[in-house]
Structure formats: C-alpha cells, structure tokens
Amino acid sequence: MKHSGKKRTRRAPAAAPARSVTPIEMDPRPAVDMVMRLMAIPGPSGQESAVAEAVVTRLRDAGVPAGWMHHDRAHRRTPSAGEVGNLVVKFPGTHRAPRRMFSAHLDTVPICVGARPRRQGTTIVARDSTTGLGADDRAGVAVILNAALELVRRDLPHPPLTFCWFIQEETGLHGARLVNRTLLGKPKLAFNWDGGAPDKLTVGATGGYRMAIQVHGIASHAGGAPEQGVSAISVAALAIADLQQRGWHGLIRQGAGAGTSNVGVIDGGNATNIVTDHVVLRAEARSHDTRFRERIVNEMRRAFERAARHVRNDSGQTATIDFDGRLDYDSFRLPDDEPSVLAAEAAVQAIGREPQRAIANGGIDANWTFRHGIPAVTLGCGQRHPHTVRESLDVPDFEAACRIALQLAVG
Image (cartoon, rainbow, N blue to C red; front, side):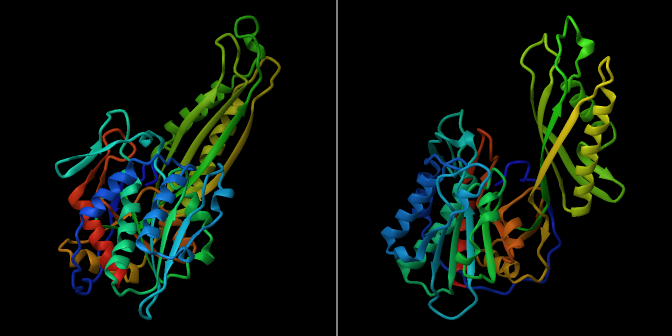
C-alpha cells in the first residue's frame, strides 16, 4: 500500500446486510507457500519485472494461454522509467455475467529488498532484522494469483474476469493512473487487495497532491560578507514555521475543513561558510475534500512567497520561489449500494467474518480505478506494520483473503 501514511482509516457506515453466499472450500497451503516465494523476489517500484515474470510463469505452468496475458506500456510514461508495464490477464467467462476485475500491486518499498521470509507460528516475518517483509503487497499479488490458479486447476465456473497486477503503486499509484484501460475489458465490479485485515472493506480514500518547492537565494561568504547573501535555508525555515504556527502543517483543522500536510524532504547547502543559495523541498497535502486540499496547497505556496519577501540582503534583493506540483490521486467514495461493495460483503460473510467498511486517509490504486470508471473496493490480506522492519503477515488472515477472493471469482 502506498506508504505516505495511507494505513490510517476511519470507519464508514454500513449499508443493508449482504446477501447470503455458499462458501467454497479450498486448501490454503499452496497459497502460503506461493506468497513466501513471492516476498523473497526483489521488486521495488520501477523494478518489478522479476515478480511479474514469476506471476506469468505460474499462470503459464497452470495452462493459462499466453494470449490471455498482456503487459501495457505504462512504465514508459511514469515519472521514473520502469522495467515493465502493468500485467493484465483476461479470463473469458464460462457463463454470461458482468465482468469482474481483481487487482493488486507488484512493487514493494526499498526496505524490503533482500527479504528472506520465514514462518513463525501463525505469522510470517523477515529473517533479517534489517529488512521489511514485502507483504505489502506481495500478499495481494498472491491472493489474486491463487484465485486465478484455483479456477484453472479445479475447472470452476466463473464470470468473465480481469486480473491486473499494477506497477509503481508505492511511488504515487502510477501504474493504476496510467493503465491501458482498453486491456481491462470494461469490468462492472472490481476488487483490489492491499494492506490490512481481510474483513476491512475500504470504500473511499483521501486525495493527495505532491509539491516540489525550490528556493533560489543569493550566495555569499558566510564570514566575510553574510549581509550580501540571501539564505535559501532561512526562507524555507520561515515558511515552514509560518505554516506550523498558523495551523497549516501536520494535522489540519480549519473551520469545517480537515486534511494534512507535510514538508518531508529538505535538500540544500554544502558548506557552513557559504550562505546557501538553493534549497529544494518536497511536500504533500491531503484531504477528502478537493477544494480544501487546494486551499492547503495555496496556503503552502503563500507561506513560501511571504518568507521570500522577508529575507533581504543589504541591497534589498530577495529570494525567488519555484512552486511545482501535481495531483497524485483524487479522493473518492463508493455509494452505499455499490455492487462491488455488496458482493465483497457477501463474500466476507460467506467465510464467517463480519465485514467492516472503512475510509482511508491515504492513496490506494482504487483512487485511480474509480477515476477510470471502475468502482473498486479494497480488501486487506493480513499485512501488519508495512514499510518497517517489523512488517509481518498474519497467516490466518492471508488464508481468509484467499478464500474471499475465490468466492468473488466464481461470482
């Protein structure tokens, strides 16, 4: 899941009880073995080719025709070049019914490179204390791959299905944003697997905007002529302090508006005896309310512009600000009666769990599938503490996620 704080959620109100569904039995042991193998494959954002090939190999070995499998060229349009595009596999249905889509993301965060998974009772952890596990989101990769394999191995009836493994989720949901929609086959229901418990149904998520801010000052000797310089560091410090003091940094509550912002990276300067003339900052703003998020961005821009006017050298010169940004993903909220949500609730109940709707305070691939006209509900796979060396995978929860996916795959 997209790391940038996306794990925080708040509960959404439940709708009417889901319809009853007959549970489908399955042996989860092959899926557990598969997820351990997948987590051991290095594949940070932009370097997903090895794990994509592992998925293709499993499908091909099970008898899935090569003509059903396609890579798009999303990796050629991402901000950072990647090795491979999104992997899309389309199963024709055994009977007429609306097409369903299953998705997960292939990439992990860099801390997971070199992970060596090991079983520890009912939990899978990294053998080394210096790496993450990669359950985010190799567990999701394994959940939908297992569903596809079960259909083939057991010759189960199913509606038309699209399986999509997205790239570069962790760096900004780029695979989902740039996916070739014509390959997806116009699914009417969609289910995405990422972090959290298998009975948590994420039906909405916040929107995120990222900024690159450059402060251009004037260099001078910090001991011999500091008054001739304009410190870019001073400008940046004043701007951040202004945002903090006025309530526009961190958790933000202004009137009826709510959101978050963060200046997460500051880079500049190379010597203590030089007045720093250039600083680059990277920041973000989030809110479930599009207009309020835009207001946060504007307040951040104004803070840097004000700070630039306040720092002058002895000639009256000031710094200049380059403020650039992009929408990473917009907020969304599925209707209470959305068929994808109701179907997911029924599948969760079929395995004896109680579904819980939630709203995420971070981005997920479903932010972009929603914008593409594909309303996806996101379910968890049992991942815990993602993006840290404490990451683990709860095996019973992972097995439950596999059962839920298979329920949904047969329709």
